[in-house]
Image 1 (cartoon, rainbow, N blue to C red):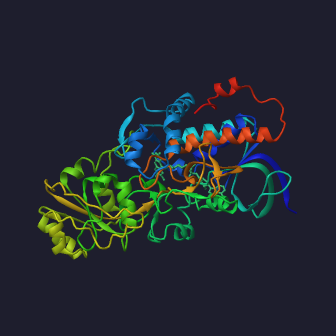
Image 2: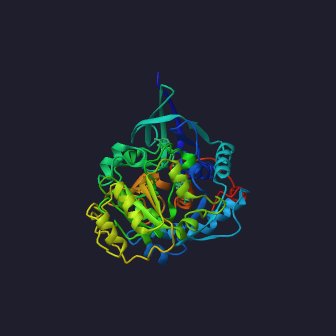
Image 3: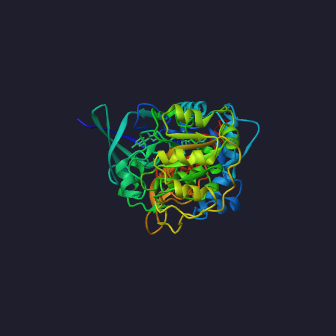
Length: 472
Ligand SMILES: Cc1cc2nc3c(=O)[nH]c(=O)nc-3n(C[C@H](O)[C@H](O)[C@H](O)COP(=O)(O)OP(=O)(O)OC[C@H]3O[C@@H](n4cnc5c(N)ncnc54)[C@H](O)[C@@H]3O)c2cc1C
């Protein structure tokens, strides 16, 4: 027999955006259930470096992400300080000093994201919210005693949930090869996953089945270059193996030509390489780069790591030589066109014919290189990895999901990596947007359901402020 139950708000996804949305909605008086597909909460948020960052202002956002959604960017930038203050008020560790220049333009603070996720979970439970893990969504329909009927499955048992509001917080579609093939056909099918495994586009599919429109470029994504080949690419090594410093090197394909302008940053090169046939290239740099950017900590409190050494240990193809001539010879033996590579290192700026990034009017551009100066010289074979997708569900600035006419689909909200267009090829952070959009959705959904039903008096606002559950 199918069990049937009813909740005002159902949140799908137990990462930062979902936990935040659920705890805010519950604190505002809604009856809330958070469903997580995997056996534990946390998603990619739990795997992250814990850097709470975004663009410092709209002008820098626009420069970095010209095709991004300015409304959503305005929302995130405006709510950033309040969001940070709430994390501090929760008592978890937040660095006193800001880290400047994140991804070349952002600023942020490192915080203890794991402890904060636990705090959000306990706030949700204290507000009579409910958490269920290991629950799979089978279907959604807009009918029933409440607005929506969700059919779910847990430990082989089917259940029906009737709800007035659904918050989609499933973390993007990067973990589904089928969804990647459908929405980002230019990205190589075998791209490495640098994310939790549950984010398979369920939020996107569910929103589309309810009439939602897409937003942003679905072919764009956040991630970093990692060694190739790489053994044991497990979550504890995601950051160790990320070649964050590639903007200081030269990235050449097998034809000996560069694929892009390296100075734009590793998260951009990573996307460009995903559209190169074969998805591998050699990152060439000198001792100056290896011993500075190549060992610096990517984020505060991470610690220094020799990324080249770790990559070699992981099994990556590589070369090291006292002269550039010798390096070219070694790369020749590894399949790189030596004659063209010699020209490239001498300043030839012709783009590799293997680079295919022309789909969105952004043909690869390269600029003159700074010379490789200090020996020894290094080459490391790299490949792209996908952390989360940047295109997604269209929302307004209350996180309400929109249809293709730009109208709200009442009672459906999307947050965090499920919404599209805030980052778009350029990247403006994941945790702060997840936290902030989660807050907005939690509040909006709670208001929506309280307008739909006459409920007993709401919890006094002062209580919510004390617990750090309002504003932002
Ligand atoms: C190694 C690494 C380092 C990072 N470092 C940083 C950083 O320092 N700063 C930063 O800003 N960003 C960082 N990020 C990105 C950041 O972690 C993400 O942008 C952010 O976690 C997204 O939060 P979310 O809540 O949208 O998704 P997630 O935290 O991924 O949560 C989504 C959850 O939804 C669940 N789910 C999926 N489908 C369903 C379903 N049908 N029903 C129920 N549950 C479902 C998933 O299992 C998952 O638990 C990093 C990411 C990684 C992997």
